[in-house]
Image 1 (cartoon, rainbow, N blue to C red):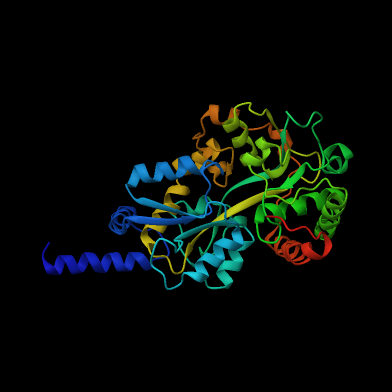
Image 2 (cartoon, one colour; image 1 turned 90 degrees about the horizontal axis):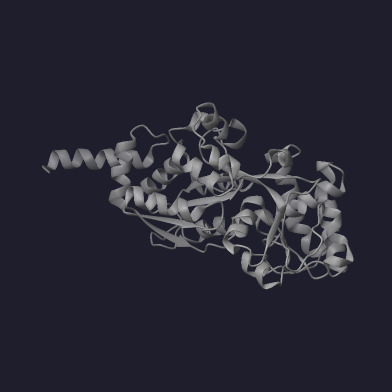
Length: 364
């Protein structure tokens, strides 16, 4: 390549690295391949089908994916960006996947850079930052994942978890002082106890878990498929898509039942964002393009998640019937509450700050 042409190409790539919108996807692909790597964090393979998503991205673009701390919580992801601002190595996240309320927090802290994917207009306004700093990708609802080899009578609502028959049985799928999934679990329990009063749900949720802990029903262990199967956490409160994926993975050993509770049904949206200090900014943008493409969105359905572009895909008849038939009965989701960002910020602050004082259980 002659020098003038080479300079022009490099200049175009530099401009592309700072653009906030996908103007030229082919140029982005070439720039991302030139970087050759992508650093992701907090993406366990059984979460929403991420194993298949990562494999699909690598196969399509030939870019190496470095997977950091798969079990990290949303707060951990933000801390990882802060701790690696000047680090251009594999320990510095290029992208994050966090609970929706952590998106504005990361933006306010200057941890994200803006980028709007090609399908930006088909992402609902309610789950994206208007300037492109973060954008919701998929959602699920809190459910009970039950080891039926150990639990004979399946709980159907939050109040059931307080019964003596569930002693040493109930666990959250994260630390409620830092992990979005666990915070939402406490809120959902409180929403049920407060009979749908969002303003009182955080306090009610803390009191519920304090009672659960005092009765000996709460297990201060982060619930996972392994702990469920081993019997240390026979009932795990977690996103429906994680529980359904476990059911498939465990293949009846033990038998797993997944129940969406009768009340306190809370939907949680997870958002994507690109680190302001990303070592591989173009690969990060290409990753977002892949996640929000039709191919990426359908991959969420394969992992039992509801993609945020679901309505657009359905309107264009892009959703295979076999994927729809694998999802739980739609009736279970009719009562689902989608908390606003303001509501999430309010109850997250209460739960994370008051868990130790009210519940006093060190979840780890």
